[in-house]
Length: 170
Image 1: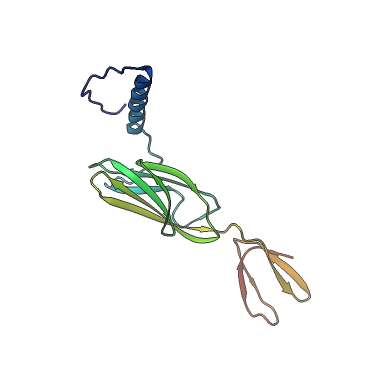
Image 2: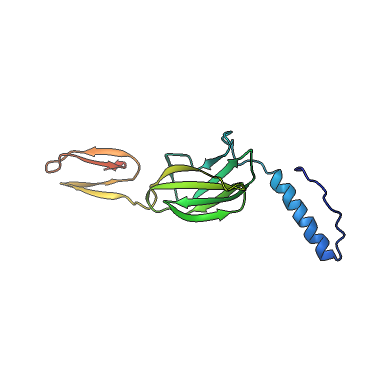
């Protein structure tokens, strides 16, 4: 358990007060003994985004997991921004949440504030390819279907070059 100092003896006047006091003490102990969500950047202060990986390909919803390092002051707040819009806020030194992403590239930024008012952050860029269905390409006299996520070059009579990320099925 974390370091605690008994400042004053409290004698609760009711069972409800005793229960509340017990819950507050236990919650404080759990917060101080929390296991980091991943190997955190040792620089202080800093935010480490554990998931998703920077420049990674993701599917929606994406799990965002982050933790902080601050040797000088306790972290009081963390906020997740998706493409510069606030989407999640927590009063803790680590977080885990799911975000729904549209198709395309996105910036996920996690800002943290400590008790001194210092702000520190980390950003990852991810690409969400979900939502795009197969693309049909007409090739005289037959057609082909291209699935997302691969590169295929097609040369034809009227089309000199088409590049698409997908598989070519005959």
